[in-house]
Length: 195
Image (cartoon, rainbow, N blue to C red; front, side, top):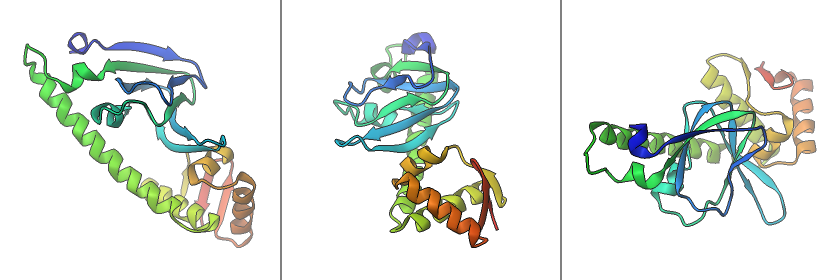
């Protein structure tokens, strides 16, 4: 299957740009190990973290499937990672051998796109809140629900959380302090507890 797709595994150091904004959307990546982030930087240099990529997850597939001429986002290694890169043309068009696994891969790809669409809507729910406080509480509630308990870790440091919520870091830190003083949350670094 990997030979049919012309797949190759590549390792990247931390902070390396795996896919660069503006480059052709011709490859699909599968994170084999490590962590990466989908990031967008606006004209003024403001960074937004659009998502965290964990091992086993695909990235770049939505843009490749849509045949977007240029990537509107970058994918950056958050730590040293290994990635399998697949040319999207090999994946999206069945080969002359009509491989049985090809249909399964296309089905899995469609399921992945649908799952990411749902996650995108959840993120939009959070960042559409009007205040930093509302965004933060919505984000923490989402993670508590996902963890199934009131104590949980988030995948971001303070600056990354500010970038994800699209708020100012100092305002976010101030809001976390206020919520702690009000007895609504407790936290240490990226570990939080809803009280």
